[in-house]
Image 1 (tube, rainbow, N blue to C red):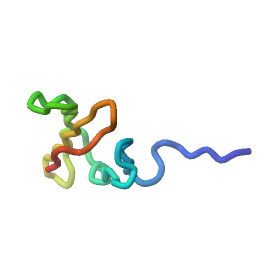
Image 2 (image 1 turned 120 degrees about the vertical axis):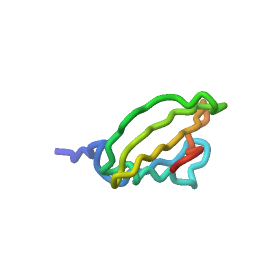
Image 3 (image 1 turned 30 degrees about the vertical axis):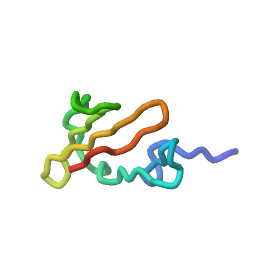
Length: 76
């Protein structure tokens, strides 16, 4: 029997397709509560924004993306 790794296990980071040497660190999302997901209109490429609550603080992360990959454009 082969062991299957579940997608929710392991570290929460990924390597962008266009830069395999830089990790996207998304570990701050672990244990958070997602409040809202949407698109930031001022972002030229992508603009996927995730609003979340962690340790009683409201936070946001905004991703830029295109056909070459995904990257964090703002986090706070």
